[in-house]
Amino acid sequence: MSEALKKHWPEYLMEAAELGLFMFSACAFTVLLFHPSSPVAQMIHDSLLRRLLMGAAMGSTAIAIIFSPLGQRSGAHFNPSVTWIFFRLGKIEASDAAFYTLFQFAGGIAGVLLASLTLGRLVTHQSVNYAVTLPGPQGPIVALFAEIVISFILMSVVLTVSNTKRLARWTGMFAGALVATYITIESPISGMSMNPARTLSSAIGAQVWMFLWIYFVAPPLGMLLAAEVYRRLNMGRAVVCAKLHHHNNKRCIFRCNFNAQQ
Image 1 (cartoon, rainbow, N blue to C red):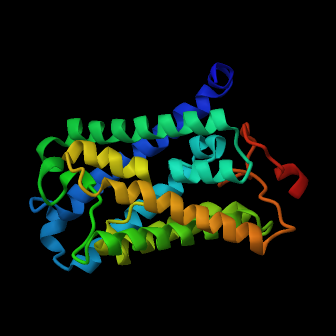
Image 2 (image 1 turned 30 degrees about the horizontal axis):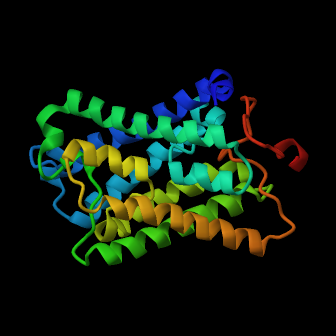
């Protein structure tokens, strides 16, 4: 473990920074689009249009992070569920997966803290509430299944696209498009998390714990199901790497077969 930390600490810090940036962006755009004092919120009253704009903002944020120098080097997981699925697929060492997870949680919490320090009471207002993810009116069981489904689809797309030679370089675009679509359409059902670290970060700020279990169970379960289905449907097709964007000259710390694919 100490050897992994000594060798790969830059990638761990990058993972922390990526989720931190994502969470700061989530809080900031929620204030912009949903806080009653925001000029944008005052101008746009249609909830679907607000979610569409929020989806576009967060989808673009995800894409920017994936294609950034940080994402190109670390692999741009910024999600413990993604990291541990790649561990299950044999692409990442256990020590790296453990440190990725630790730093992802720390980075997400730091991002919300930074938003709280810079945005002040705006982020605490009930219309924003630290961009917390909560079940919709249909209740926690529906939210649980919705999170499983969207996590399953996301991981299925990431695995399929990243391991298709002619499409692999665009994996980040596919992932960002799904994030945007889910926020627009699915967020009223489950809050649209797919990420335990993302949800815990907001929950700590909002001090809302009652449905936290949903977002620790559903995303990894949905992604695990996707990985198992992928393995069985593509028995002769190996997973190339744990990076979402590999068409760059950045260091790769994973069990990587990218060069063999070229």
